[in-house]
Image 1: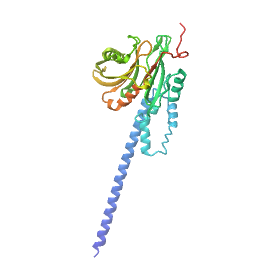
Image 2: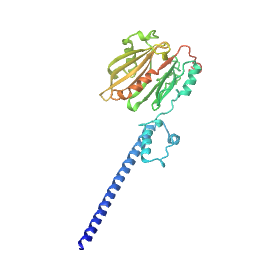
Image 3: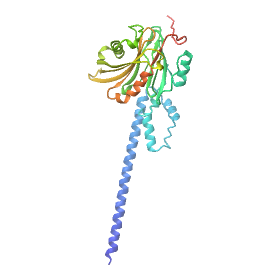
Image 4: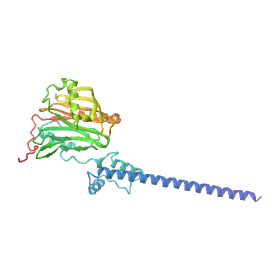
Amino acid sequence: HNSVPDQSKSIVKETRGHRQSQSYHTSDQSKTTNGTMKILCVSLLVALLANTGAAFSFRQMKTRRSNTDLDMTTDSRREFFTKSVAAAGLGSGVLLAPTPSNAVGGMDKVNSKLRGYGLPLVAKPPNGFTPLLEVWGRGKNRFPLLVQFCHPVTWVVTTPSNDSNGEDGTVQAGEYAKGDTATFFVYEAPGHVDNLASQGKPLYQEVLQKAISQKGSNIYQDFKVTKVVPQTGPEYEGRDYVICDFKYQLLTGAGFEVDRKGVAAITSSGPAIEVLWCASTALRYKKTEEDLRFIASSFRVFSEGINFEGQLLNYDL
Protein backbone atom coordinates (compact mmCIF):
# COMPACT_ATOMS: atom_id res chain seq x y z
CA HIS A 1 0.00 0.00 0.00
CA ASN A 2 2.86 2.45 0.82
CA SER A 3 4.81 1.56 -2.33
CA VAL A 4 2.59 3.66 -4.64
CA PRO A 5 3.40 7.07 -3.01
CA ASP A 6 7.08 6.14 -2.92
CA GLN A 7 7.03 5.36 -6.62
CA SER A 8 5.22 8.67 -7.30
CA LYS A 9 7.86 10.58 -5.38
CA SER A 10 10.56 8.82 -7.34
CA ILE A 11 8.91 9.68 -10.66
CA VAL A 12 8.52 13.34 -9.64
CA LYS A 13 12.21 13.55 -8.67
CA GLU A 14 13.28 11.96 -11.94
CA THR A 15 11.06 14.34 -13.91
CA ARG A 16 12.43 17.36 -12.06
CA GLY A 17 15.98 16.13 -12.63
CA HIS A 18 15.32 15.62 -16.33
CA ARG A 19 13.86 19.14 -16.63
CA GLN A 20 16.83 20.61 -14.81
CA SER A 21 19.17 18.71 -17.11
CA GLN A 22 17.31 20.02 -20.15
CA SER A 23 17.42 23.54 -18.70
CA TYR A 24 21.18 23.32 -18.13
CA HIS A 25 21.65 21.92 -21.65
CA THR A 26 19.56 24.76 -23.18
CA SER A 27 21.50 27.30 -21.14
CA ASP A 28 24.77 25.87 -22.42
CA GLN A 29 23.51 26.04 -26.01
CA SER A 30 22.43 29.66 -25.49
CA LYS A 31 25.85 30.53 -24.07
CA THR A 32 27.54 28.84 -27.02
CA THR A 33 25.32 30.73 -29.49
CA ASN A 34 25.96 34.05 -27.74
CA GLY A 35 29.68 33.35 -27.74
CA THR A 36 29.64 32.50 -31.44
CA MET A 37 27.72 35.68 -32.28
CA LYS A 38 30.20 37.75 -30.27
CA ILE A 39 33.14 36.18 -32.07
CA LEU A 40 31.53 36.80 -35.47
CA CYS A 41 30.75 40.42 -34.64
CA VAL A 42 34.25 41.07 -33.30
CA SER A 43 35.76 39.45 -36.41
CA LEU A 44 33.67 41.65 -38.67
CA LEU A 45 34.64 44.78 -36.78
CA VAL A 46 38.31 43.80 -37.01
CA ALA A 47 37.88 43.35 -40.75
CA LEU A 48 36.26 46.77 -40.94
CA LEU A 49 39.15 48.42 -39.13
CA ALA A 50 41.72 46.61 -41.28
CA ASN A 51 40.04 47.56 -44.55
CA THR A 52 39.32 51.17 -43.73
CA GLY A 53 42.52 52.06 -41.90
CA ALA A 54 44.12 53.70 -44.91
CA ALA A 55 41.07 55.72 -45.90
CA PHE A 56 39.40 56.75 -42.67
CA SER A 57 40.32 58.12 -39.29
CA PHE A 58 38.47 56.95 -36.21
CA ARG A 59 36.62 60.28 -36.15
CA GLN A 60 35.40 59.77 -39.71
CA MET A 61 34.29 56.25 -38.86
CA LYS A 62 32.38 57.58 -35.88
CA THR A 63 30.67 60.19 -38.08
CA ARG A 64 29.69 57.64 -40.71
CA ARG A 65 28.45 55.34 -37.95
CA SER A 66 26.15 58.02 -36.58
CA ASN A 67 24.92 58.88 -40.06
CA THR A 68 23.81 55.29 -40.66
CA ASP A 69 22.08 55.12 -37.27
CA LEU A 70 23.78 51.96 -36.08
CA ASP A 71 22.23 52.00 -32.63
CA MET A 72 23.68 48.84 -31.13
CA THR A 73 21.71 49.19 -27.92
CA THR A 74 18.33 48.78 -29.61
CA ASP A 75 19.21 46.26 -32.31
CA SER A 76 18.57 42.59 -31.90
CA ARG A 77 21.52 40.25 -32.32
CA ARG A 78 20.35 39.45 -35.85
CA GLU A 79 20.07 43.13 -36.86
CA PHE A 80 23.46 43.92 -35.34
CA PHE A 81 25.04 41.00 -37.20
CA THR A 82 23.48 42.10 -40.51
CA LYS A 83 24.62 45.69 -40.13
CA SER A 84 28.10 44.58 -39.12
CA VAL A 85 28.34 42.53 -42.30
CA ALA A 86 27.25 45.53 -44.35
CA ALA A 87 29.71 47.82 -42.60
CA ALA A 88 32.55 45.39 -43.22
CA GLY A 89 31.95 45.59 -46.95
CA LEU A 90 30.07 42.32 -47.32
CA GLY A 91 26.73 44.03 -47.73
CA SER A 92 26.21 47.66 -48.65
CA GLY A 93 29.85 48.58 -48.07
CA VAL A 94 29.05 52.26 -47.52
CA LEU A 95 31.94 52.72 -45.11
CA LEU A 96 34.39 51.27 -47.63
CA ALA A 97 33.60 53.75 -50.40
CA PRO A 98 35.66 56.94 -49.96
CA THR A 99 34.56 59.98 -51.90
CA PRO A 100 36.56 60.42 -55.14
CA SER A 101 39.24 63.05 -54.67
CA ASN A 102 38.67 64.85 -57.98
CA ALA A 103 35.90 63.10 -59.87
CA VAL A 104 32.38 64.47 -59.80
CA GLY A 105 30.01 61.83 -58.43
CA GLY A 106 26.28 61.51 -57.77
CA MET A 107 23.33 62.10 -60.08
CA ASP A 108 22.71 65.76 -59.25
CA LYS A 109 26.34 66.87 -59.46
CA VAL A 110 27.10 64.90 -62.62
CA ASN A 111 24.01 66.13 -64.43
CA SER A 112 24.70 69.70 -63.33
CA LYS A 113 28.17 69.47 -64.89
CA LEU A 114 26.85 67.82 -68.05
CA ARG A 115 24.21 70.51 -68.38
CA GLY A 116 26.94 73.14 -68.13
CA TYR A 117 28.86 71.42 -70.94
CA GLY A 118 25.71 71.19 -73.04
CA LEU A 119 25.84 67.38 -73.03
CA PRO A 120 23.09 64.75 -72.57
CA LEU A 121 22.16 64.06 -68.96
CA VAL A 122 22.69 60.71 -67.27
CA ALA A 123 19.59 58.59 -66.79
CA LYS A 124 19.01 57.19 -63.32
CA PRO A 125 21.17 54.05 -63.00
CA PRO A 126 20.02 50.81 -61.32
CA ASN A 127 19.98 50.68 -57.55
CA GLY A 128 23.47 50.37 -56.12
CA PHE A 129 25.14 52.34 -58.93
CA THR A 130 26.27 55.94 -59.19
CA PRO A 131 27.60 57.99 -62.13
CA LEU A 132 31.08 59.46 -62.28
CA LEU A 133 32.42 62.35 -64.37
CA GLU A 134 36.12 63.18 -64.59
CA VAL A 135 38.49 65.12 -66.81
CA TRP A 136 41.39 62.95 -67.99
CA GLY A 137 44.26 65.05 -69.31
CA ARG A 138 44.41 68.07 -67.03
CA GLY A 139 48.22 67.99 -67.16
CA LYS A 140 50.42 69.58 -69.80
CA ASN A 141 51.57 66.17 -71.12
CA ARG A 142 48.07 65.06 -72.16
CA PHE A 143 45.07 66.30 -74.13
CA PRO A 144 41.79 66.68 -72.21
CA LEU A 145 38.92 64.21 -72.39
CA LEU A 146 35.69 64.18 -70.39
CA VAL A 147 35.14 60.63 -69.10
CA GLN A 148 31.77 59.38 -67.86
CA PHE A 149 30.58 56.00 -66.60
CA CYS A 150 28.58 54.41 -63.77
CA HIS A 151 30.00 52.12 -61.10
CA PRO A 152 28.77 50.36 -57.94
CA VAL A 153 28.60 52.72 -54.98
CA THR A 154 30.78 50.32 -52.97
CA TRP A 155 33.69 50.57 -55.41
CA VAL A 156 36.72 52.70 -54.64
CA VAL A 157 37.47 55.38 -57.25
CA THR A 158 40.94 56.60 -58.20
CA THR A 159 41.75 59.52 -60.51
CA PRO A 160 44.93 60.80 -62.20
CA SER A 161 47.51 62.70 -60.18
CA ASN A 162 49.14 65.92 -61.37
CA ASP A 163 52.30 67.84 -60.58
CA SER A 164 54.70 70.18 -62.38
CA ASN A 165 55.89 67.31 -64.57
CA GLY A 166 52.41 66.57 -65.88
CA GLU A 167 49.71 64.00 -65.28
CA ASP A 168 50.04 60.34 -64.35
CA GLY A 169 47.56 57.54 -63.72
CA THR A 170 44.03 57.06 -64.95
CA VAL A 171 40.38 56.96 -63.98
CA GLN A 172 39.54 53.65 -62.35
CA ALA A 173 36.94 52.15 -60.04
CA GLY A 174 36.99 48.76 -58.43
CA GLU A 175 36.55 46.36 -55.58
CA TYR A 176 40.21 45.51 -55.63
CA ALA A 177 40.23 42.83 -52.94
CA LYS A 178 37.96 40.72 -55.17
CA GLY A 179 39.65 41.62 -58.45
CA ASP A 180 36.69 43.52 -59.94
CA THR A 181 37.79 46.65 -61.83
CA ALA A 182 36.77 49.17 -64.48
CA THR A 183 39.74 51.02 -65.99
CA PHE A 184 39.96 53.87 -68.50
CA PHE A 185 42.73 53.62 -71.11
CA VAL A 186 43.81 55.91 -73.95
CA TYR A 187 45.63 54.42 -76.97
CA GLU A 188 47.29 57.22 -78.93
CA ALA A 189 49.27 55.26 -81.55
CA PRO A 190 46.54 55.00 -84.21
CA GLY A 191 45.34 58.56 -83.72
CA HIS A 192 41.66 59.27 -84.32
CA VAL A 193 39.83 56.41 -86.06
CA ASP A 194 36.72 57.13 -88.11
CA ASN A 195 34.03 54.47 -88.49
CA LEU A 196 35.43 52.57 -85.54
CA ALA A 197 32.59 50.04 -85.58
CA SER A 198 33.69 48.77 -89.00
CA GLN A 199 37.39 48.37 -88.22
CA GLY A 200 37.26 44.70 -87.25
CA LYS A 201 38.48 42.46 -84.42
CA PRO A 202 42.28 42.80 -85.00
CA LEU A 203 42.21 46.49 -84.03
CA TYR A 204 40.03 45.88 -80.97
CA GLN A 205 42.31 43.06 -79.86
CA GLU A 206 45.38 45.29 -80.26
CA VAL A 207 43.79 48.08 -78.23
CA LEU A 208 42.69 45.79 -75.40
CA GLN A 209 46.03 44.05 -75.18
CA LYS A 210 47.68 47.44 -74.80
CA ALA A 211 45.12 48.31 -72.12
CA ILE A 212 45.72 45.25 -69.93
CA SER A 213 49.50 45.31 -70.30
CA GLN A 214 50.27 48.75 -68.88
CA LYS A 215 52.57 47.15 -66.30
CA GLY A 216 54.36 45.02 -68.87
CA SER A 217 53.63 42.63 -71.71
CA ASN A 218 54.82 39.66 -69.65
CA ILE A 219 51.97 39.78 -67.14
CA TYR A 220 49.38 38.01 -69.28
CA GLN A 221 48.95 35.22 -71.82
CA ASP A 222 46.28 33.64 -74.02
CA PHE A 223 44.42 36.90 -74.63
CA LYS A 224 41.41 36.59 -76.90
CA VAL A 225 38.51 38.80 -77.98
CA THR A 226 35.53 36.44 -77.98
CA LYS A 227 32.69 38.71 -79.14
CA VAL A 228 32.28 42.08 -80.88
CA VAL A 229 29.02 44.07 -80.91
CA PRO A 230 28.90 47.56 -82.50
CA GLN A 231 26.53 49.86 -80.60
CA THR A 232 23.87 51.59 -82.65
CA GLY A 233 21.23 52.49 -80.06
CA PRO A 234 19.76 56.00 -79.82
CA GLU A 235 21.46 56.47 -76.46
CA TYR A 236 24.80 56.73 -78.29
CA GLU A 237 23.50 59.62 -80.46
CA GLY A 238 25.33 58.50 -83.58
CA ARG A 239 28.74 58.14 -81.92
CA ASP A 240 30.78 55.02 -82.66
CA TYR A 241 31.08 52.59 -79.74
CA VAL A 242 31.94 48.89 -79.81
CA ILE A 243 31.38 46.40 -76.97
CA CYS A 244 33.93 43.55 -76.85
CA ASP A 245 33.99 40.44 -74.69
CA PHE A 246 37.46 39.16 -73.86
CA LYS A 247 39.40 36.72 -71.70
CA TYR A 248 43.03 36.14 -70.72
CA GLN A 249 45.30 34.62 -68.10
CA LEU A 250 46.99 36.95 -65.63
CA LEU A 251 50.52 35.84 -64.69
CA THR A 252 51.22 36.56 -61.05
CA GLY A 253 54.56 37.16 -59.40
CA ALA A 254 53.95 34.04 -57.33
CA GLY A 255 54.24 31.88 -60.44
CA PHE A 256 50.62 30.88 -61.04
CA GLU A 257 47.95 31.98 -63.51
CA VAL A 258 44.58 33.61 -62.82
CA ASP A 259 41.86 33.28 -65.46
CA ARG A 260 40.10 36.59 -66.03
CA LYS A 261 37.12 37.56 -68.15
CA GLY A 262 35.66 40.90 -69.01
CA VAL A 263 33.78 43.27 -71.27
CA ALA A 264 35.06 46.55 -72.73
CA ALA A 265 33.63 49.59 -74.48
CA ILE A 266 35.80 51.14 -77.21
CA THR A 267 35.39 54.50 -78.96
CA SER A 268 37.49 57.18 -80.65
CA SER A 269 37.09 60.77 -79.54
CA GLY A 270 39.81 63.31 -80.18
CA PRO A 271 43.26 62.19 -81.37
CA ALA A 272 43.16 58.65 -79.94
CA ILE A 273 41.15 55.52 -79.16
CA GLU A 274 39.59 55.32 -75.70
CA VAL A 275 38.61 52.20 -73.78
CA LEU A 276 36.83 51.35 -70.57
CA TRP A 277 37.69 47.74 -69.83
CA CYS A 278 35.88 45.95 -67.03
CA ALA A 279 37.06 42.59 -65.71
CA SER A 280 36.93 40.11 -62.86
CA THR A 281 38.25 36.64 -62.19
CA ALA A 282 36.66 33.90 -64.26
CA LEU A 283 35.37 32.32 -61.04
CA ARG A 284 33.42 35.47 -60.20
CA TYR A 285 32.34 36.36 -63.72
CA LYS A 286 28.96 34.65 -63.53
CA LYS A 287 28.17 36.88 -60.57
CA THR A 288 29.72 40.08 -61.92
CA GLU A 289 28.95 39.86 -65.65
CA GLU A 290 25.66 41.78 -65.54
CA ASP A 291 27.23 44.63 -63.55
CA LEU A 292 30.32 44.77 -65.76
CA ARG A 293 28.17 44.93 -68.89
CA PHE A 294 26.17 47.79 -67.46
CA ILE A 295 29.35 49.69 -66.53
CA ALA A 296 30.74 49.25 -70.05
CA SER A 297 27.45 50.31 -71.63
CA SER A 298 27.40 53.49 -69.52
CA PHE A 299 30.83 54.59 -70.76
CA ARG A 300 31.03 57.88 -72.70
CA VAL A 301 33.94 60.10 -73.76
CA PHE A 302 33.66 63.70 -74.97
CA SER A 303 36.28 66.03 -76.43
CA GLU A 304 35.05 67.94 -79.48
CA GLY A 305 33.25 71.16 -78.62
CA ILE A 306 33.95 70.90 -74.89
CA ASN A 307 35.17 74.03 -73.13
CA PHE A 308 37.78 72.83 -70.63
CA GLU A 309 38.62 76.34 -69.44
CA GLY A 310 39.31 76.25 -65.72
CA GLN A 311 39.71 72.46 -65.75
CA LEU A 312 43.31 72.28 -66.96
CA LEU A 313 46.38 72.79 -64.77
CA ASN A 314 49.10 75.29 -65.60
CA TYR A 315 52.49 75.26 -63.88
CA ASP A 316 55.11 77.95 -64.13
CA LEU A 317 58.18 76.60 -65.92
